[in-house]
Length: 323
Image (cartoon, rainbow, N blue to C red; front, side):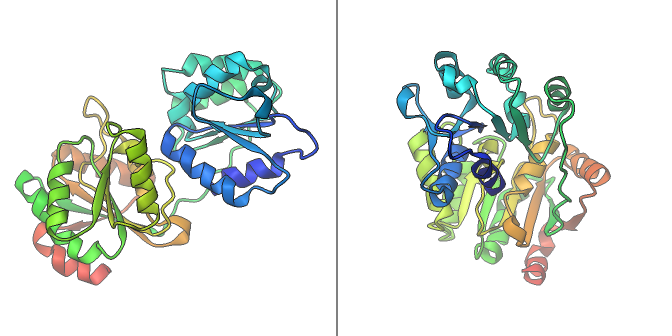
């Protein structure tokens, strides 16, 4: 996200006092994060506005606007200034472009800013996104960063479901020295794991879409400030969140889509929550089903991700060697 902020600041014409750059982000957590970057890095002669409600002061719009897509498109329908921009930046563009709720609004808006430059960011580009690019910006320059090799991947075979909670108990005496994300597909096991961690005197919190916005904002803020060690969450926080002190990700559930289909993109995004800014990261995958193993094989064959196996009986001995 730092790259997005710097890119936006460098493209502002300081002599032109109007909206020039629009940045779209898929959720509140990323909006809060990018606002923190702008607060720290923006020079006094550049202005920015965060759209976080339906009520906007038209006379006080900054040169840079950042917003969630839904709120922004509502505003753009009412405010002509938002349809006369030079740069459109979309973070986590695959999630934004494939969202059916505002896909038509996005297409309409892009048609209104034909002379604008597009900057699209994501760790994954699905076919829908590539089709969007070919339609609206066929000559776009693609910059593909090399794969992050400072993250190591492990898996623990827990196809006996009863082993899953004890495995967490074995992992944490060794890795609780680092901040850790634990990802779940649903809230089903979050409470049980939270109770276990609290019993082990490990400070933790949980964050999922069914918490209030204020609660979610407070949890992420505390985690970023290292006020607790472990954040239990869903794919809500799989994308784009920068926690420099996080070195460990645990997939309690291998990522799945609604019909239990494997979600390879979410695996890559979850993994990217650790090992930020060149630090070494570790991803531990708890394998419960045969389909989970098939998912690891696919990731190895298609993304060259190597997975080191750990048996539940060897966890304590193995973790001592790698930490």
